[in-house]
Length: 451
Image 1 (cartoon, rainbow, N blue to C red):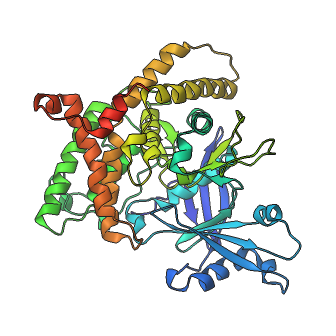
Image 2 (cartoon, rainbow, N blue to C red):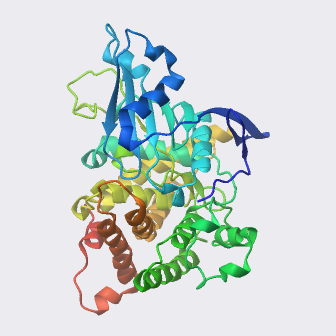
Image 3 (cartoon, one colour):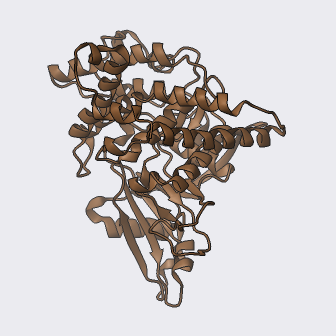
């Protein structure tokens, strides 16, 4: 997709990133390094990039090493450390750098300019680590000290309540900033079934994307899905039929869900949209009792977490962001047996609602009261309504990744599994499954389970 430039301009020495405060746009310069990371020469290219911002690491007493993280399926993520003699692990980690190189062709999916803006915006609210530099195909930022969670960790009450609080802070405090949905005409495929592409100029084509959900300022989760559908492969008749089918479903889903009332402005909040376990970090603290691998102790009730990786962050209904996180309890294997029961969802949402309104009051300088039970019931119902949409969202994404990614992951099978979640949800809410006398699918059965 094309990089949008409404809120920032390119300079000779770096990128001038525009974001908003109460008084309007603020320019902040992020250093740009005109080098690229190469997976074929990982060590050398990563070292060159890191030394560009840490020239002192080139000293004779330095011992620079790289640790590769393998939890993600979009990008390459390396942790750069300088293990100089005499430094403790904590001292080494305090100066560590994360280098994230974008996956092959992912500009089809992700607006990298917007991602940088997201990072800058979150930094202003103390919700993201310092962004150190951008380079040709990635970015570098400070390492977040803590323990990355795994899918089984997300199911621990102490963890999921901490996630609920942090997500509520995002949704209550961080503003949604309107701009165009970054997209390039050269990335769009056979779109004649919805608009006569050759009859539209770039601005008109952009308008088709940005106006997919009437009354919702772009970008948002709806415009992102429209952009992705336009970028689907269309080389075969089967692919063209799939694109047309998904376009029809998007139109249907937008009509049914996009105008529902919800938290935030215009029913949208600043959402992470990719809260898988690898993006949830348990923050360190002094240990009083023996801890498990995430640093959580047996008596722990004050665990704190933070979130990383903001490339998919975009304004969205809060219910979508929460439903999307719940889907990640099953990990990339999509283990539906471990998705949150109704009792677990209520516990999460109760914690979320309490934190959301506390942050809202703090932000507004008020002590406004609210009906906690009613708000919890309302959001619990909305998350139920949105439970099928994450499968649709990631299913489209995976169909594109299957054609562009060089990462060793079976995106094609993943796409069918995730889209299967959407179709199962459709059959359940329409009554088609029951009328056909079919057994309830495992995911729907687990979702209906009380405890």
